[in-house]
Image (cartoon, rainbow, N blue to C red; front, side):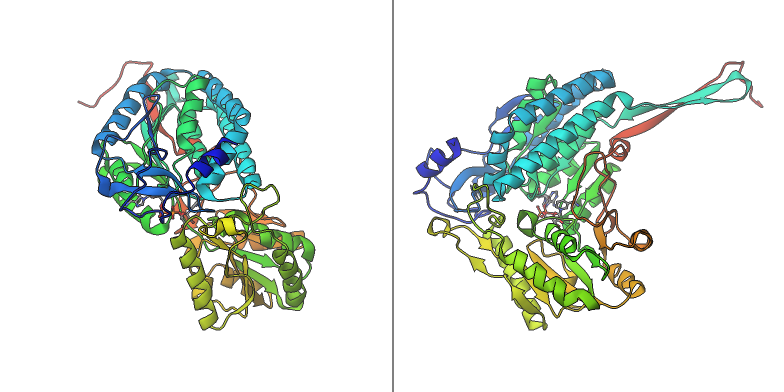
Length: 517
Ligand code: NAD
Protein backbone atom coordinates (compact mmCIF):
# COMPACT_ATOMS: atom_id res chain seq x y z
CA UNK A 1 0.00 0.00 0.00
CA UNK A 2 2.99 2.32 0.42
CA UNK A 3 2.87 3.11 -3.25
CA UNK A 4 -0.68 4.38 -3.13
CA UNK A 5 0.12 6.64 -0.19
CA UNK A 6 3.10 8.03 -2.04
CA UNK A 7 1.01 8.50 -5.16
CA UNK A 8 -1.37 10.77 -3.25
CA UNK A 9 1.52 12.90 -1.99
CA UNK A 10 2.73 13.35 -5.54
CA UNK A 11 -0.63 14.03 -7.04
CA UNK A 12 -0.19 17.77 -7.32
CA UNK A 13 3.07 17.51 -9.23
CA UNK A 14 3.15 18.83 -12.75
CA UNK A 15 2.36 16.10 -15.24
CA UNK A 16 4.96 15.72 -17.95
CA UNK A 17 5.74 13.15 -20.56
CA UNK A 18 8.52 10.68 -20.00
CA UNK A 19 11.65 11.58 -21.85
CA UNK A 20 10.90 15.28 -21.34
CA UNK A 21 14.40 16.52 -20.64
CA UNK A 22 13.45 19.95 -19.41
CA UNK A 23 11.96 21.01 -16.10
CA UNK A 24 12.20 17.78 -14.17
CA UNK A 25 10.13 17.64 -10.98
CA UNK A 26 11.55 19.93 -8.31
CA UNK A 27 9.61 18.53 -5.33
CA UNK A 28 11.87 16.92 -2.68
CA UNK A 29 9.35 14.05 -2.63
CA UNK A 30 10.63 12.99 -6.05
CA UNK A 31 14.03 11.37 -5.81
CA UNK A 32 16.43 10.10 -8.44
CA UNK A 33 16.40 6.52 -9.66
CA UNK A 34 19.59 5.13 -8.17
CA UNK A 35 22.39 3.04 -9.58
CA UNK A 36 23.49 -0.10 -7.77
CA UNK A 37 27.25 -0.44 -7.71
CA UNK A 38 29.49 -2.66 -5.61
CA UNK A 39 26.61 -3.78 -3.39
CA UNK A 40 25.17 -0.32 -2.65
CA UNK A 41 22.45 1.97 -3.99
CA UNK A 42 24.28 5.09 -5.16
CA UNK A 43 23.43 8.40 -6.82
CA UNK A 44 24.70 8.67 -10.40
CA UNK A 45 27.91 10.71 -10.43
CA UNK A 46 26.87 12.35 -13.69
CA UNK A 47 25.00 15.55 -12.85
CA UNK A 48 24.36 16.80 -16.40
CA UNK A 49 20.81 18.10 -16.11
CA UNK A 50 20.28 17.83 -19.86
CA UNK A 51 20.43 14.06 -19.33
CA UNK A 52 17.53 13.87 -16.85
CA UNK A 53 13.84 13.24 -17.29
CA UNK A 54 10.73 12.49 -15.26
CA UNK A 55 9.65 8.89 -14.88
CA UNK A 56 5.85 8.76 -14.95
CA UNK A 57 3.38 6.13 -13.78
CA UNK A 58 1.76 5.23 -17.14
CA UNK A 59 -1.78 5.02 -15.73
CA UNK A 60 -1.93 8.48 -14.12
CA UNK A 61 1.05 10.44 -15.38
CA UNK A 62 2.26 10.99 -11.81
CA UNK A 63 5.98 11.64 -11.46
CA UNK A 64 7.62 8.64 -9.78
CA UNK A 65 11.32 9.38 -10.11
CA UNK A 66 13.84 11.52 -11.91
CA UNK A 67 15.99 9.40 -14.18
CA UNK A 68 19.53 10.71 -14.55
CA UNK A 69 21.59 9.07 -17.26
CA UNK A 70 24.82 7.56 -15.99
CA UNK A 71 28.02 8.88 -17.57
CA UNK A 72 31.55 7.57 -18.15
CA UNK A 73 32.53 7.90 -14.50
CA UNK A 74 29.51 5.85 -13.39
CA UNK A 75 30.33 3.22 -16.00
CA UNK A 76 33.95 3.09 -14.87
CA UNK A 77 32.88 2.56 -11.25
CA UNK A 78 30.46 -0.21 -12.19
CA UNK A 79 32.81 -2.03 -14.57
CA UNK A 80 35.77 -1.81 -12.17
CA UNK A 81 33.61 -3.24 -9.37
CA UNK A 82 32.45 -6.01 -11.70
CA UNK A 83 36.01 -6.85 -12.82
CA UNK A 84 37.26 -7.09 -9.24
CA UNK A 85 34.32 -9.14 -7.99
CA UNK A 86 34.39 -11.53 -10.93
CA UNK A 87 37.81 -12.84 -9.89
CA UNK A 88 36.41 -14.21 -6.63
CA UNK A 89 33.03 -15.26 -7.99
CA UNK A 90 34.48 -16.99 -11.05
CA UNK A 91 36.87 -18.98 -8.83
CA UNK A 92 34.03 -20.47 -6.77
CA UNK A 93 32.57 -23.85 -7.66
CA UNK A 94 29.38 -24.01 -9.69
CA UNK A 95 27.69 -25.66 -6.72
CA UNK A 96 28.54 -22.72 -4.46
CA UNK A 97 27.33 -20.22 -7.05
CA UNK A 98 24.16 -22.25 -7.48
CA UNK A 99 23.41 -22.09 -3.76
CA UNK A 100 23.46 -18.28 -3.92
CA UNK A 101 21.12 -18.24 -6.92
CA UNK A 102 18.69 -20.67 -5.32
CA UNK A 103 18.55 -18.53 -2.19
CA UNK A 104 17.94 -15.46 -4.40
CA UNK A 105 15.03 -17.30 -6.04
CA UNK A 106 13.47 -17.90 -2.61
CA UNK A 107 13.90 -14.24 -1.72
CA UNK A 108 12.26 -13.14 -4.98
CA UNK A 109 9.28 -15.34 -4.10
CA UNK A 110 9.10 -13.90 -0.58
CA UNK A 111 9.12 -10.34 -2.03
CA UNK A 112 6.77 -11.11 -4.92
CA UNK A 113 4.09 -8.66 -3.73
CA UNK A 114 6.49 -5.71 -3.45
CA UNK A 115 8.24 -6.50 -6.74
CA UNK A 116 4.93 -6.90 -8.57
CA UNK A 117 3.73 -3.49 -7.39
CA UNK A 118 6.95 -1.85 -8.53
CA UNK A 119 6.70 -3.64 -11.88
CA UNK A 120 3.14 -2.37 -12.39
CA UNK A 121 4.15 1.18 -11.43
CA UNK A 122 7.02 1.00 -13.91
CA UNK A 123 5.10 -0.54 -16.81
CA UNK A 124 1.37 0.11 -16.26
CA UNK A 125 0.66 -3.60 -16.83
CA UNK A 126 -2.12 -5.34 -14.84
CA UNK A 127 -1.00 -6.47 -11.40
CA UNK A 128 -1.90 -10.12 -12.04
CA UNK A 129 0.53 -10.11 -14.96
CA UNK A 130 3.27 -8.58 -12.83
CA UNK A 131 2.74 -11.28 -10.19
CA UNK A 132 2.87 -13.97 -12.84
CA UNK A 133 6.04 -12.47 -14.35
CA UNK A 134 7.84 -12.21 -10.99
CA UNK A 135 6.99 -15.84 -10.20
CA UNK A 136 8.52 -16.84 -13.55
CA UNK A 137 11.65 -14.82 -12.74
CA UNK A 138 12.09 -16.69 -9.45
CA UNK A 139 11.79 -19.96 -11.39
CA UNK A 140 14.47 -18.84 -13.86
CA UNK A 141 16.92 -17.86 -11.12
CA UNK A 142 16.30 -21.19 -9.35
CA UNK A 143 16.74 -23.08 -12.64
CA UNK A 144 20.18 -21.54 -13.28
CA UNK A 145 21.02 -22.12 -9.63
CA UNK A 146 20.44 -25.81 -10.34
CA UNK A 147 22.38 -25.80 -13.60
CA UNK A 148 25.42 -23.98 -12.14
CA UNK A 149 26.93 -27.17 -10.73
CA UNK A 150 26.54 -28.99 -14.06
CA UNK A 151 28.69 -26.59 -16.09
CA UNK A 152 31.69 -28.64 -17.13
CA UNK A 153 34.17 -29.38 -19.88
CA UNK A 154 35.01 -32.67 -21.60
CA UNK A 155 37.75 -35.28 -21.43
CA UNK A 156 39.13 -36.54 -24.75
CA UNK A 157 41.35 -39.62 -24.85
CA UNK A 158 44.08 -39.35 -27.52
CA UNK A 159 46.59 -41.89 -28.86
CA UNK A 160 49.74 -42.90 -26.94
CA UNK A 161 48.11 -42.20 -23.59
CA UNK A 162 47.93 -38.51 -24.39
CA UNK A 163 44.73 -36.71 -23.68
CA UNK A 164 42.99 -33.38 -23.89
CA UNK A 165 40.36 -31.74 -21.79
CA UNK A 166 38.22 -28.67 -22.13
CA UNK A 167 37.25 -26.14 -19.50
CA UNK A 168 34.11 -24.04 -19.84
CA UNK A 169 35.22 -20.68 -18.44
CA UNK A 170 33.29 -17.47 -17.76
CA UNK A 171 33.70 -14.59 -20.22
CA UNK A 172 34.37 -12.02 -17.49
CA UNK A 173 32.18 -8.90 -17.28
CA UNK A 174 28.83 -9.08 -19.08
CA UNK A 175 26.97 -5.92 -20.07
CA UNK A 176 23.18 -6.32 -20.13
CA UNK A 177 20.69 -3.89 -21.68
CA UNK A 178 16.93 -4.33 -21.33
CA UNK A 179 13.72 -3.14 -22.99
CA UNK A 180 10.76 -1.78 -20.97
CA UNK A 181 8.04 -4.40 -21.38
CA UNK A 182 9.38 -7.04 -18.94
CA UNK A 183 11.92 -5.15 -16.80
CA UNK A 184 12.49 -7.60 -13.93
CA UNK A 185 12.39 -10.55 -16.30
CA UNK A 186 15.16 -9.06 -18.43
CA UNK A 187 17.30 -8.38 -15.38
CA UNK A 188 16.90 -12.00 -14.20
CA UNK A 189 17.02 -13.71 -17.62
CA UNK A 190 20.37 -12.06 -18.26
CA UNK A 191 21.94 -12.05 -14.82
CA UNK A 192 21.10 -15.55 -13.58
CA UNK A 193 22.76 -17.55 -16.40
CA UNK A 194 25.64 -15.04 -16.51
CA UNK A 195 26.23 -15.43 -12.77
CA UNK A 196 25.75 -19.22 -12.86
CA UNK A 197 28.67 -19.37 -15.30
CA UNK A 198 30.91 -17.25 -13.04
CA UNK A 199 30.61 -13.89 -14.79
CA UNK A 200 29.80 -10.58 -13.18
CA UNK A 201 27.32 -8.21 -14.80
CA UNK A 202 26.60 -4.52 -15.31
CA UNK A 203 22.93 -4.17 -16.25
CA UNK A 204 21.24 -1.13 -17.75
CA UNK A 205 17.45 -1.33 -17.50
CA UNK A 206 15.35 0.64 -19.95
CA UNK A 207 15.22 4.28 -18.88
CA UNK A 208 11.44 3.90 -18.80
CA UNK A 209 11.51 1.09 -16.21
CA UNK A 210 14.33 1.66 -13.72
CA UNK A 211 12.61 0.56 -10.49
CA UNK A 212 13.10 -3.19 -10.00
CA UNK A 213 16.69 -3.91 -11.11
CA UNK A 214 18.19 -2.28 -8.00
CA UNK A 215 15.93 -4.41 -5.80
CA UNK A 216 17.29 -7.48 -7.58
CA UNK A 217 20.78 -6.26 -6.63
CA UNK A 218 19.75 -6.17 -2.97
CA UNK A 219 18.17 -9.61 -3.21
CA UNK A 220 21.35 -11.07 -4.71
CA UNK A 221 23.39 -9.46 -1.94
CA UNK A 222 21.14 -10.87 0.78
CA UNK A 223 21.46 -14.28 -0.88
CA UNK A 224 25.25 -14.09 -0.55
CA UNK A 225 26.40 -12.73 -3.91
CA UNK A 226 29.69 -10.87 -3.41
CA UNK A 227 29.45 -7.09 -3.84
CA UNK A 228 30.28 -5.98 -7.38
CA UNK A 229 29.02 -9.14 -9.11
CA UNK A 230 25.70 -7.50 -10.06
CA UNK A 231 25.59 -3.78 -10.83
CA UNK A 232 22.93 -1.49 -12.25
CA UNK A 233 23.48 1.73 -14.19
CA UNK A 234 20.48 3.86 -15.05
CA UNK A 235 20.28 5.82 -18.26
CA UNK A 236 19.23 6.24 -21.84
CA UNK A 237 20.86 5.49 -25.19
CA UNK A 238 24.12 7.23 -24.39
CA UNK A 239 24.61 5.18 -21.22
CA UNK A 240 23.87 2.03 -23.21
CA UNK A 241 26.40 3.02 -25.82
CA UNK A 242 29.04 3.73 -23.15
CA UNK A 243 28.40 0.26 -21.73
CA UNK A 244 28.75 -1.49 -25.12
CA UNK A 245 31.96 0.39 -25.91
CA UNK A 246 33.58 0.04 -22.48
CA UNK A 247 36.87 -1.85 -22.86
CA UNK A 248 36.27 -3.68 -19.56
CA UNK A 249 33.07 -5.30 -20.84
CA UNK A 250 33.64 -8.70 -22.46
CA UNK A 251 30.15 -9.50 -23.74
CA UNK A 252 26.89 -7.70 -24.43
CA UNK A 253 23.47 -9.25 -23.96
CA UNK A 254 20.87 -6.92 -25.48
CA UNK A 255 17.06 -6.96 -25.64
CA UNK A 256 15.32 -4.30 -27.68
CA UNK A 257 14.60 -3.10 -31.20
CA UNK A 258 16.34 -4.21 -34.38
CA UNK A 259 17.74 -0.71 -35.00
CA UNK A 260 19.40 -0.42 -31.61
CA UNK A 261 20.45 -4.09 -31.70
CA UNK A 262 22.35 -3.35 -34.87
CA UNK A 263 24.18 -0.48 -33.12
CA UNK A 264 25.02 -2.74 -30.17
CA UNK A 265 26.40 -5.35 -32.55
CA UNK A 266 28.46 -2.69 -34.34
CA UNK A 267 30.00 -1.57 -31.04
CA UNK A 268 30.76 -5.21 -30.17
CA UNK A 269 32.32 -5.75 -33.61
CA UNK A 270 34.73 -2.88 -32.95
CA UNK A 271 35.79 -4.41 -29.64
CA UNK A 272 35.56 -8.06 -30.91
CA UNK A 273 33.15 -8.82 -28.09
CA UNK A 274 30.64 -11.62 -27.72
CA UNK A 275 27.08 -10.47 -28.30
CA UNK A 276 23.57 -11.87 -28.02
CA UNK A 277 20.58 -10.00 -29.39
CA UNK A 278 16.91 -10.51 -28.53
CA UNK A 279 15.08 -8.25 -30.97
CA UNK A 280 11.67 -7.51 -32.43
CA UNK A 281 9.14 -9.63 -34.28
CA UNK A 282 6.03 -9.76 -36.44
CA UNK A 283 5.07 -13.34 -35.85
CA UNK A 284 2.40 -15.44 -37.58
CA UNK A 285 -0.33 -17.43 -35.85
CA UNK A 286 -2.01 -19.92 -38.21
CA UNK A 287 -5.50 -21.22 -37.48
CA UNK A 288 -6.63 -24.20 -39.53
CA UNK A 289 -10.30 -25.05 -40.07
CA UNK A 290 -10.00 -28.27 -38.04
CA UNK A 291 -8.92 -26.49 -34.85
CA UNK A 292 -10.96 -26.13 -31.72
CA UNK A 293 -12.03 -22.55 -32.46
CA UNK A 294 -12.55 -21.54 -28.84
CA UNK A 295 -8.99 -22.62 -28.07
CA UNK A 296 -7.78 -20.80 -31.17
CA UNK A 297 -9.45 -17.60 -29.94
CA UNK A 298 -7.73 -18.04 -26.57
CA UNK A 299 -4.44 -18.50 -28.43
CA UNK A 300 -4.97 -15.39 -30.54
CA UNK A 301 -5.72 -13.30 -27.46
CA UNK A 302 -2.65 -14.62 -25.63
CA UNK A 303 -0.69 -13.89 -28.79
CA UNK A 304 -1.77 -10.26 -28.91
CA UNK A 305 -3.16 -8.73 -25.75
CA UNK A 306 -0.80 -9.46 -22.84
CA UNK A 307 1.03 -6.39 -21.49
CA UNK A 308 -1.01 -4.05 -23.70
CA UNK A 309 0.30 -5.88 -26.74
CA UNK A 310 3.88 -4.83 -25.97
CA UNK A 311 5.35 -8.32 -26.33
CA UNK A 312 8.15 -9.14 -28.77
CA UNK A 313 6.93 -12.65 -29.60
CA UNK A 314 3.32 -11.63 -30.28
CA UNK A 315 1.55 -13.41 -33.12
CA UNK A 316 0.08 -10.24 -34.62
CA UNK A 317 -0.50 -11.71 -38.09
CA UNK A 318 -3.39 -14.08 -37.44
CA UNK A 319 -3.93 -16.25 -40.53
CA UNK A 320 -7.37 -17.93 -40.45
CA UNK A 321 -8.54 -20.54 -42.95
CA UNK A 322 -11.34 -19.15 -45.10
CA UNK A 323 -14.09 -21.60 -44.08
CA UNK A 324 -13.88 -20.68 -40.36
CA UNK A 325 -12.86 -17.05 -40.58
CA UNK A 326 -16.21 -15.45 -39.89
CA UNK A 327 -17.01 -17.73 -36.90
CA UNK A 328 -13.50 -17.19 -35.54
CA UNK A 329 -13.75 -13.40 -35.85
CA UNK A 330 -17.19 -13.32 -34.17
CA UNK A 331 -15.91 -15.33 -31.20
CA UNK A 332 -12.70 -13.26 -31.01
CA UNK A 333 -14.53 -9.94 -31.04
CA UNK A 334 -16.97 -11.02 -28.32
CA UNK A 335 -14.18 -12.06 -25.99
CA UNK A 336 -11.97 -9.09 -26.79
CA UNK A 337 -14.78 -6.65 -26.03
CA UNK A 338 -15.21 -8.28 -22.62
CA UNK A 339 -11.62 -7.45 -21.59
CA UNK A 340 -11.53 -5.00 -18.70
CA UNK A 341 -9.55 -1.83 -19.34
CA UNK A 342 -8.82 -0.12 -16.06
CA UNK A 343 -6.79 0.39 -12.91
CA UNK A 344 -3.61 -1.70 -13.32
CA UNK A 345 -3.72 -2.39 -9.58
CA UNK A 346 -7.19 -4.00 -9.74
CA UNK A 347 -7.00 -7.77 -9.81
CA UNK A 348 -9.67 -8.05 -12.51
CA UNK A 349 -8.10 -5.59 -14.95
CA UNK A 350 -6.92 -7.25 -18.14
CA UNK A 351 -5.80 -4.17 -20.10
CA UNK A 352 -3.52 -1.73 -18.31
CA UNK A 353 -1.86 1.49 -19.43
CA UNK A 354 0.40 1.92 -22.45
CA UNK A 355 3.95 2.71 -21.40
CA UNK A 356 4.14 6.31 -22.74
CA UNK A 357 2.19 8.90 -24.68
CA UNK A 358 4.73 8.51 -27.50
CA UNK A 359 4.20 4.75 -27.74
CA UNK A 360 0.41 5.20 -27.64
CA UNK A 361 0.57 7.76 -30.45
CA UNK A 362 2.62 5.30 -32.49
CA UNK A 363 0.05 2.53 -31.97
CA UNK A 364 -2.89 4.82 -32.80
CA UNK A 365 -1.16 6.13 -35.91
CA UNK A 366 -0.74 2.53 -37.14
CA UNK A 367 -4.51 2.01 -36.72
CA UNK A 368 -5.10 5.12 -38.85
CA UNK A 369 -2.66 3.95 -41.50
CA UNK A 370 -4.43 0.57 -41.56
CA UNK A 371 -7.77 2.28 -42.18
CA UNK A 372 -6.30 4.39 -44.98
CA UNK A 373 -4.83 1.27 -46.58
CA UNK A 374 -8.24 -0.45 -46.58
CA UNK A 375 -8.42 -2.47 -43.35
CA UNK A 376 -11.61 -2.53 -41.29
CA UNK A 377 -11.47 -1.85 -37.56
CA UNK A 378 -13.82 -4.46 -36.08
CA UNK A 379 -13.22 -3.31 -32.52
CA UNK A 380 -10.91 -1.18 -30.37
CA UNK A 381 -7.96 0.86 -31.53
CA UNK A 382 -9.06 4.00 -29.72
CA UNK A 383 -7.82 5.86 -26.68
CA UNK A 384 -10.06 5.46 -23.63
CA UNK A 385 -10.18 6.92 -20.12
CA UNK A 386 -11.43 4.10 -17.88
CA UNK A 387 -12.02 6.46 -14.91
CA UNK A 388 -11.54 10.24 -14.42
CA UNK A 389 -8.50 9.65 -12.18
CA UNK A 390 -6.73 8.13 -15.20
CA UNK A 391 -7.29 11.16 -17.45
CA UNK A 392 -3.53 11.79 -17.68
CA UNK A 393 -2.66 8.16 -18.33
CA UNK A 394 -2.75 6.43 -21.69
CA UNK A 395 -5.09 3.48 -22.32
CA UNK A 396 -5.87 1.93 -25.71
CA UNK A 397 -8.64 -0.57 -26.37
CA UNK A 398 -7.43 -3.87 -27.94
CA UNK A 399 -7.86 -3.61 -31.68
CA UNK A 400 -8.92 -6.22 -34.25
CA UNK A 401 -8.46 -5.47 -37.95
CA UNK A 402 -10.00 -7.42 -40.81
CA UNK A 403 -9.80 -6.98 -44.60
CA UNK A 404 -6.04 -7.01 -44.20
CA UNK A 405 -3.57 -8.09 -46.85
CA UNK A 406 0.10 -8.98 -46.61
CA UNK A 407 1.45 -5.73 -48.06
CA UNK A 408 -0.23 -3.40 -45.60
CA UNK A 409 2.07 -1.39 -43.35
CA UNK A 410 0.26 -2.68 -40.28
CA UNK A 411 0.87 -6.29 -41.38
CA UNK A 412 4.57 -5.73 -42.10
CA UNK A 413 5.80 -3.47 -39.26
CA UNK A 414 6.23 -4.38 -35.63
CA UNK A 415 3.71 -2.11 -33.85
CA UNK A 416 4.29 -3.17 -30.24
CA UNK A 417 0.71 -2.55 -29.16
CA UNK A 418 -2.62 -4.44 -29.09
CA UNK A 419 -3.34 -4.44 -32.83
CA UNK A 420 -4.28 -7.85 -34.26
CA UNK A 421 -4.55 -8.27 -38.03
CA UNK A 422 -6.78 -11.08 -39.34
CA UNK A 423 -5.59 -12.51 -42.67
CA UNK A 424 -7.52 -15.11 -44.67
CA UNK A 425 -5.90 -18.14 -46.33
CA UNK A 426 -6.97 -21.12 -48.44
CA UNK A 427 -4.37 -23.87 -48.09
CA UNK A 428 -1.35 -25.02 -46.10
CA UNK A 429 1.31 -24.40 -48.73
CA UNK A 430 0.10 -20.87 -49.32
CA UNK A 431 -0.04 -19.92 -45.63
CA UNK A 432 3.46 -21.23 -44.87
CA UNK A 433 4.88 -19.08 -47.67
CA UNK A 434 3.02 -16.00 -46.46
CA UNK A 435 3.87 -16.63 -42.80
CA UNK A 436 7.58 -16.71 -43.66
CA UNK A 437 7.40 -13.57 -45.79
CA UNK A 438 8.89 -11.27 -43.13
CA UNK A 439 12.31 -10.02 -42.13
CA UNK A 440 11.62 -11.20 -38.58
CA UNK A 441 11.71 -14.73 -37.17
CA UNK A 442 11.09 -14.61 -33.45
CA UNK A 443 8.01 -16.79 -32.95
CA UNK A 444 4.98 -18.40 -34.54
CA UNK A 445 2.08 -20.70 -33.80
CA UNK A 446 -0.30 -23.24 -35.31
CA UNK A 447 -3.76 -24.28 -34.18
CA UNK A 448 -4.94 -27.60 -35.64
CA UNK A 449 -6.20 -30.95 -34.42
CA UNK A 450 -4.14 -32.74 -37.08
CA UNK A 451 -0.86 -33.62 -35.36
CA UNK A 452 0.93 -34.47 -38.58
CA UNK A 453 -0.01 -31.14 -40.08
CA UNK A 454 1.04 -29.30 -36.92
CA UNK A 455 4.58 -30.66 -37.05
CA UNK A 456 4.81 -30.42 -40.84
CA UNK A 457 3.94 -26.71 -40.72
CA UNK A 458 6.12 -25.96 -37.68
CA UNK A 459 9.12 -27.57 -39.38
CA UNK A 460 8.78 -25.10 -42.26
CA UNK A 461 8.28 -21.92 -40.23
CA UNK A 462 11.46 -19.86 -40.04
CA UNK A 463 11.35 -18.74 -36.43
CA UNK A 464 13.02 -19.58 -33.13
CA UNK A 465 10.07 -20.11 -30.76
CA UNK A 466 7.03 -22.02 -32.01
CA UNK A 467 3.76 -23.04 -30.39
CA UNK A 468 1.26 -25.79 -31.22
CA UNK A 469 -2.27 -25.16 -29.90
CA UNK A 470 -1.17 -22.43 -27.48
CA UNK A 471 0.85 -19.20 -27.58
CA UNK A 472 3.31 -17.07 -25.58
CA UNK A 473 4.21 -19.79 -23.08
CA UNK A 474 7.68 -19.49 -21.52
CA UNK A 475 8.22 -22.51 -19.27
CA UNK A 476 11.51 -22.39 -17.45
CA UNK A 477 14.20 -24.38 -19.21
CA UNK A 478 12.92 -23.86 -22.77
CA UNK A 479 15.31 -21.81 -24.93
CA UNK A 480 13.99 -18.56 -26.41
CA UNK A 481 15.34 -16.46 -29.27
CA UNK A 482 14.99 -15.46 -32.86
CA UNK A 483 15.88 -16.29 -36.45
CA UNK A 484 16.63 -13.67 -39.09
CA UNK A 485 16.46 -10.05 -37.85
CA UNK A 486 14.85 -11.16 -34.58
CA UNK A 487 18.19 -11.89 -33.04
CA UNK A 488 21.29 -13.92 -32.42
CA UNK A 489 21.77 -16.36 -29.56
CA UNK A 490 19.34 -17.83 -27.05
CA UNK A 491 18.11 -16.99 -23.59
CA UNK A 492 16.72 -19.60 -21.18
CA UNK A 493 17.38 -23.32 -21.16
CA UNK A 494 20.81 -24.91 -21.02
CA UNK A 495 21.60 -23.19 -24.36
CA UNK A 496 21.99 -19.83 -22.61
CA UNK A 497 25.03 -21.16 -20.74
CA UNK A 498 26.93 -21.46 -24.01
CA UNK A 499 26.48 -17.74 -24.58
CA UNK A 500 28.00 -16.85 -21.19
CA UNK A 501 31.07 -19.10 -21.37
CA UNK A 502 34.08 -19.74 -23.56
CA UNK A 503 35.91 -23.03 -24.04
CA UNK A 504 39.55 -23.55 -23.18
CA UNK A 505 41.14 -26.67 -24.72
CA UNK A 506 44.11 -28.25 -22.99
CA UNK A 507 46.38 -30.83 -24.69
CA UNK A 508 48.41 -33.01 -22.27
CA UNK A 509 51.51 -34.84 -23.54
CA UNK A 510 52.29 -38.03 -21.61
CA UNK A 511 55.41 -38.91 -23.63
CA UNK A 512 58.55 -37.09 -24.74
CA UNK A 513 57.58 -34.54 -27.39
CA UNK A 514 59.02 -35.03 -30.90
CA UNK A 515 59.94 -32.33 -33.42
CA UNK A 516 61.24 -32.54 -37.03
CA UNK A 517 64.03 -30.03 -36.33
P1 NAD B 1 14.90 0.03 -27.79
O1 NAD B 1 15.75 -0.69 -28.76
O2 NAD B 1 14.46 1.40 -28.11
O3 NAD B 1 15.67 0.16 -26.38
C1 NAD B 1 16.17 -0.98 -25.73
C2 NAD B 1 17.29 -0.57 -24.80
O4 NAD B 1 18.38 -0.09 -25.56
C3 NAD B 1 16.93 0.54 -23.81
O5 NAD B 1 17.47 0.20 -22.56
C4 NAD B 1 17.63 1.74 -24.39
O6 NAD B 1 17.99 2.72 -23.43
C5 NAD B 1 18.87 1.12 -25.00
N1 NAD B 1 19.51 1.88 -26.07
C6 NAD B 1 18.93 2.78 -26.92
N2 NAD B 1 19.87 3.23 -27.79
C7 NAD B 1 21.03 2.60 -27.50
C8 NAD B 1 22.33 2.62 -28.07
N3 NAD B 1 22.65 3.40 -29.11
N4 NAD B 1 23.28 1.82 -27.53
C9 NAD B 1 22.99 1.00 -26.50
N5 NAD B 1 21.77 0.96 -25.91
C10 NAD B 1 20.80 1.74 -26.41
O7 NAD B 1 13.67 -0.93 -27.48
P2 NAD B 1 12.42 -0.67 -26.54
O8 NAD B 1 11.56 0.36 -27.18
O9 NAD B 1 12.88 -0.47 -25.14
O10 NAD B 1 11.70 -2.09 -26.58
C11 NAD B 1 10.88 -2.48 -27.62
C12 NAD B 1 11.63 -3.39 -28.58
O11 NAD B 1 12.25 -4.45 -27.86
C13 NAD B 1 10.68 -4.08 -29.55
O12 NAD B 1 11.27 -4.10 -30.83
C14 NAD B 1 10.57 -5.49 -29.01
O13 NAD B 1 10.22 -6.47 -29.94
C15 NAD B 1 11.94 -5.71 -28.47
N6 NAD B 1 11.94 -6.77 -27.45
C16 NAD B 1 12.50 -7.97 -27.77
C17 NAD B 1 12.47 -9.02 -26.86
C18 NAD B 1 13.06 -10.37 -27.18
O14 NAD B 1 13.29 -11.14 -26.27
N7 NAD B 1 13.30 -10.69 -28.42
C19 NAD B 1 11.87 -8.83 -25.62
C20 NAD B 1 11.31 -7.59 -25.33
C21 NAD B 1 11.36 -6.56 -26.26
